[in-house]
Length: 249
Ligand SMILES: C[S@@+](CC[C@H](N)C(=O)[O-])C[C@H]1O[C@@H](n2cnc3c(N)ncnc32)[C@H](O)[C@@H]1O
Image 1: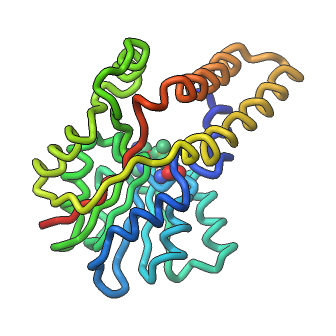
Image 2 (image 1 turned 60 degrees about the horizontal axis):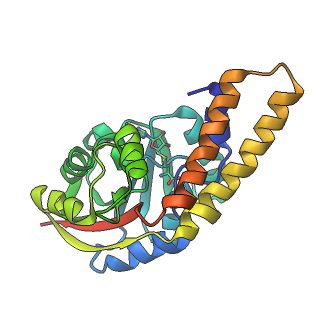
């Protein structure tokens, strides 16, 4: 990834599709959480879900991400909101979620579990959970069986492991977890909360690039982001993000 594209992502309000309403809807599925739960937000990015969780749960929250820059940004938000005693943001690999020195009652991960692979990620999270703890993740999911070739090619290029809701529910069962509920994120969580700020940032970065010494590699990656947005507008009925909420049995 071009360094400037990384900067572009760091400046977005969130690192993938999602919104506050969906985070709260998933939280409402969880109806039997212990008092003052220990919560992990894995692959937190700049903390979009971390801050919603901190407002809606009386909890001790640990947020981890592999990239130092996003943790720096989240730490500023934590300090500005006076959340330092309840929320800790750390550079840490979520593949080592069990290595944080404690077990969690809830592990949250929006748009990030795919980095470990859905099944491997759920098994990793389950290993870091207390008995009867919960996991809530969003995962890119095929919403229709009869997707056109363009969508099949897109998926095999960017996320070959993507499967249907039923396929993911099967993986959840295989991991020894019970499914507590799931729902498809609304299109607004892609368009309003993710793509609109991304498109604005693409325009800004392009204007800067054209004003200076033009970098063709940067322009190519900016154009790819626009293609991703156009592709979603065209084919959103065939794929989306699904929130899966599950519990360790
Ligand atoms: C699509 S972004 C989602 C960020 C955030 N959850 C959100 O919804 O805004 C995926 C995040 O996973 C992080 N990530 C990727 N691999 C990781 C790993 N092994 N451990 C921790 N974080 C990781 C990336 O740095 C990135 O911030």
